[in-house]
Image 1 (cartoon, rainbow, N blue to C red):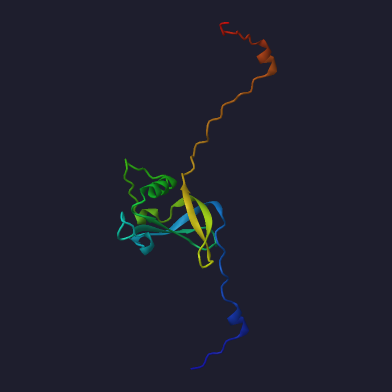
Image 2: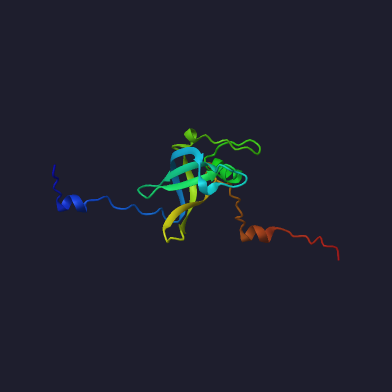
Length: 156
């Protein structure tokens, strides 16, 4: 069987997606699973078990992030980013519950030894508070200040 290719077919390959820019972004968790990662093996985590996340922002490349089981502080930041309640020193995150959640993330770019640049999660940021912070007003007119009587209570 023979196949013929036209110039249109060979030049219409999908364009490479750009990296997520550095900075703070709101990204959706589109995939989450538990599993081993050989690069995360330590004495505290001999199997390299991780919570493996895939984050998405618009039409940029996906950002992959593995949170090792032994790094509870990192899991705590993720829990805070999704506004999940934590109890004591234990953070419980179920992969199925994370899919579809939107998190605020600080993204940095990393250049590997081979020269390949990739977008990486620097840290998860706490969920935005829905209540605006209370502002203290200090609008005191000059007239009000002039009318105030200041007493010097320093005993000299």
